[in-house]
Image (cartoon, rainbow, N blue to C red; front, side, top):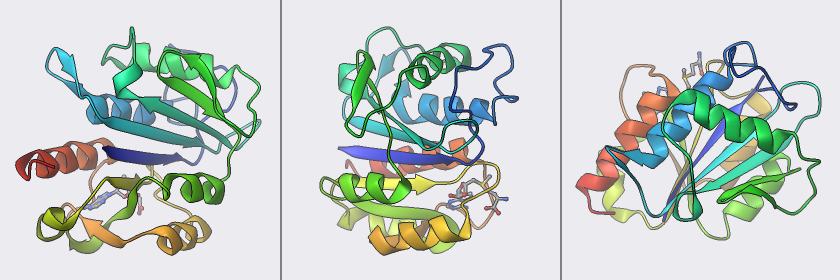
Length: 195
Ligand code: SAM
C-alpha cells in the first residue's frame, strides 16, 4: 500500500460550486492531487489511499478517504473528482467513516485523530523541500504515506503534530513545487523502486 494525505487549509466543508473549484478554498488543488495519486493512463492504481483533510469554512474538520481498489465511476478530471468530494462533504460526518460512494468515505477527524489512525497501517513521511532526498530513503520504506500541504503549506502547529507521528521529513526537489507535482514524483520514485 501507499498513501497520501493532503491538508486543505481553506478547503470548503459544505457543498460547493463545481464551476468554481478554486473559489471553494482551492478545492482544485485537492482534486489534482487525487488525480495524480490514483490515475494511470486509462487505468487506476490498485493499492493507493488518499486522505484529504478539509479545514475551511463552515464546518471543519472533515476528513475524506479514497480507496483506489474500491472506486467506481471516478475519472481523472478535476470536475469529476470535485463532484465526489462535493457529495461527501454534504453528509453529516460521524467519528467513524461513512461511505458516500464506492471507495469514498467521510468522517469528522482532527489532524491528530487522523494521523493516529493512519499510523496503525502506514509509515508516515512529511514532504517538505528541506527534507532528506526521497531517493535515498525509498528502498527502506514499507507502506509509506506522505503528508503534504496545499498552496499555503502546513500551519506551524499542524507541522508539529505531523512530525510527532512521522518517520522522517523527505524532499523530492530543492525547488518548492506544487503539491500535485510532488505526488507525481513520489509515485515515480516508488514505481522505480518497485514499492
Ligand atoms: N508557500 C507554501 C509553503 O511555503 O509551504 C508552498 C506549499 S507547496 C505549494 C505545497 C506542499 O507541497 C508543501 O506544503 C509540501 O508538503 C510540498 N512540497 C513542495 N515542494 C516540495 C519539495 N521540493 N519536496 C517535498 N515536498 C514539497
